[in-house]
Length: 148
Image (cartoon, rainbow, N blue to C red; front, side, top):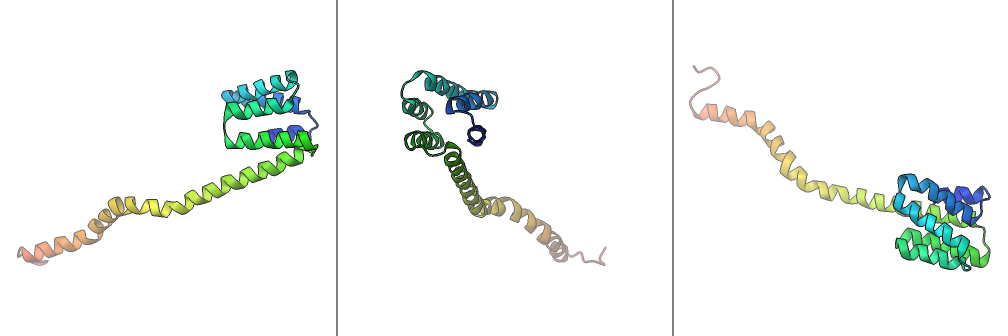
């Protein structure tokens, strides 16, 4: 999405921006790159640009892609600047990712309780109580510190 924002801010048309993003995505994410390539082709051939965007949302079926498609359709319909709309959407996605990461981090102490109880506390008890248990066993067996 940030690459699409950069392309829009650089003055590329939507068709050229999608083609550029498709090329860049093709290296790291071939499936998504293919979808953007197909959308770029559809943008150049279909009379309704909205239909090309809706086809992308239908094929990919991800919430984030649906958000981008909705933004693209609205900017085409109402004539709002594409770069600013995509920048706002990008910031919103970033905030959502941050909130999900914070939620996972907040759940971590509860998840770590079980391994702590099962693995760390028994070892801690052995280390702390082991020498005392050996001393008590020696005292009851008749051997003392000075006894031979």
